[in-house]
Length: 333
Image 1 (cartoon, helix red, strand yellow):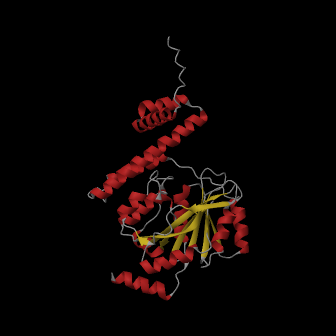
Image 2 (image 1 turned 90 degrees about the vertical axis):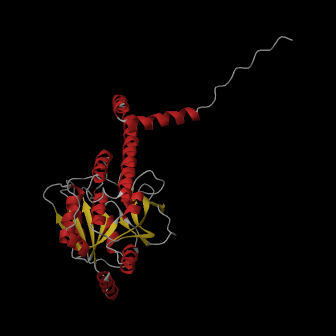
Image 3 (image 1 turned 60 degrees about the vertical axis):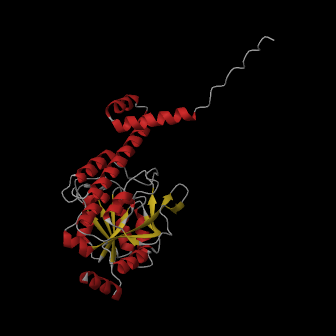
């Protein structure tokens, strides 16, 4: 507790410095938007690190031009493509700020975002702060409403509550999508880095590891992050939900969590939700590609997929209009 008080006093005395970390791969068409949104924050960042993950387009040339225009922009180039985890880890190793803010190359910050998040970090003594977000549609250059209730108030979030909300198909946005700022001293103290074994769901796995090391996790309800949907041509993100399911299942048996029935239950719930999302995604792909052989095979071999298809058929039958009945013949008088 004394350490927390000292940290809070230090942060309130001097505004902490912050590094914005952008992992980029083939991002020549949109990384400039991300960098500009970081540089124009109401609380100016110390630096904007762009880690190029061996792009095959002109991403490096674009970032070098941005660096010539503003000395806060720094470029790190990786010799071979390692995925988001490898790129972010390279950025974490190089970051000079007391805090590090993660920004995807196809997304952007609202102007007041970093100021609001750091203010609550100081107030709450958090090690990690996430915030609400809005969806950005490049086709119409429009911004949607906040995905979480903005009026619920900022708060510290326990691990079990995070797990309850870090899953898809629950009516509210998956909290695994919320983008963090990290206190560098906490990451360094515990040697925390993104998992290199996964290119999918690495944000969730990193956060679970942070919670396991006692991280104080805070949520700011004001939406400050602009998320570009994967259906957009701007986004290059794809997800392997089957791999995410396997990683979540592995956590259920993790010795750090298996003795806690609540955490185990929450992990089971997330695993089930991710597996259902995998079924939905695969069904849509099979239909789009007219791959009915694969669809039939999944029905036979995958109980979750079979249950999803069965419920879909039942809903379709319920919505069918009633057959029009032929008029009854006149009865003899």
